[in-house]
Image (cartoon, rainbow, N blue to C red; front, top):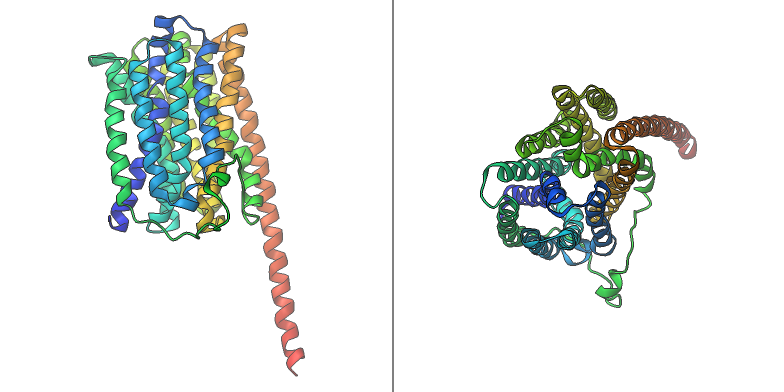
Length: 416
């Protein structure tokens, strides 16, 4: 078995690699559109079926690792993800692409909550665990976008090679996760069958619910923007900003998510009281800059705005992961993180699907600008929810302090 430090590295690698699959097809979407002649709406449908399959997996097997262990769920998901990559490599039309995305979504949904829980279980401390677990999605997406863009532009087999490489990586990781020691977990009740536990469900321990619901606007704001980048981002770069190199498209998409990984680190070293507002402020500023860049057709400004927005994405998401990780009991972390990703991926897919419909009717540039404006509004709602949550926490702490003082004052009277 691996040591705790090696287990942490392998768990982090598995978490990052899982999300690499999410972005690998993105630089290829314009190629698929030219080859198979589908519209922007069909493109977002191809993107969305992945998310719906992912949500189905989260609802059924998202918390399974809390019952049967992290290793079998993570390994099985990685093997299924390798199969999804093979299906991408051999896809010959829109139907094959949809099937590959469904298999990919099921695998990522099964792996996401589990690998996040594995990272938190093996982390040297909760703070470091929250930094890594919130950074690996962005890191994985960066690798997928840049690797796919480079291989499409410069390598042989431009539509297949990235998927064959990733299939091999997933099979290797599927073997390595078996060497990560299992964390302690309660045994399931004997009378409750495993199949019954797979019924669609999502849940939160009562102690986690106030924190979770207060963070829903934040999750929606961050992941709605990520969904736009991975669904219509390559089309915006090609049609609005006139970028025709697949490698450059991959780099620009990677800038947003690389900045997201950096944002998690910046958040972790910032003063505690500023961490949430750092995320919201940079996220809103970056989106506003990208809107101006699209209106002016200025690629450097768009890249700068993407970097600033990505920084906010990472900082805000890290804050949410850290808050939920602290509130969740160890034995139910898989369930809590699975529920978190259900909300996140709904925000990831539904607005992007609506944007695909809008682009067909109003055009890509007006749709992207309107999407950005709605994103800013959502960030403001998340900030307002954060202020309310902070005031409520202060009131609860003051009330607890008053009860403690009263109790201490009454104690001598009771013993006299």
